[in-house]
Length: 366
Image (spheres, rainbow, N blue to C red):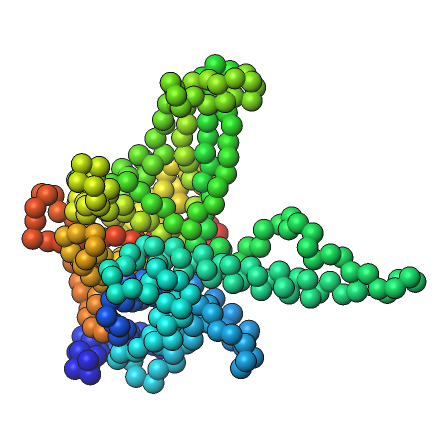
């Protein structure tokens, strides 16, 4: 890798970003699913900075048990504080912790990168929420009262959900609107999301997949909706809208589909165009939320149960290709070679699977 590292340094020359580090990650047999997601998260700069800030402000005692959050922060700190600009690191502690904590990732089978990302973000949120609640209950100091000390019970139901810095980066809000076709009453139910999973079609685009995601569905026959106003089951129209777009929009393309006749999953190699700049126009609150693509996790292979993951990352206006230990510079135009295949049987099996978009700040508010 020394040669590859110096090749990358040569390619960037005096354009090598000040203080940035580009390190490949060693693969422990089948951990490319993990490496590709870790690289995408490392180059999600707001997330990286907040994780490292959290870590420096919350140095755990030597005897405290490590968790996925401390292992991830430790890995990111290790990368960012390397003396060399390029090289290879082994994310051993992180992978060991992941396998210890979740048996799904223990086997040497092919794992799903989206499943891992989902598990990791939810796990980080759980750890941060528990810490915030523990801090809150510690601050409930016993009050001295004539008949002895009393404390406000920390077991009282949590009125306000804890909003962590993971939420501030990745969490958006969807609203599920159902309109009764008899009385026209609209019932709206909000739900949060850390990523959006989109159904895909051949020769489509992210914009058309998002339109389908928000398309109106009629509930009739056995699917009728119970309208509280009519006090009965009624025909209704239902649609899902993005109420609050997140700062970091993570889009998962549902490339693995269960085929009833085959009795197994099949990989959809469909060509789905993902733009470098994306406008979300079907949102409730903001007329247009604009995003810029900064990472793509790519699945390489023809089937769901085998294959390989790599990631493409944008850092300081350069695109880089991370394949476990190897890091190379690529041209921005190469990103489009990962849209998918227009024909069902194609020799190209490298397809965009998870897309990471960062929200652009409107000039007026910056």
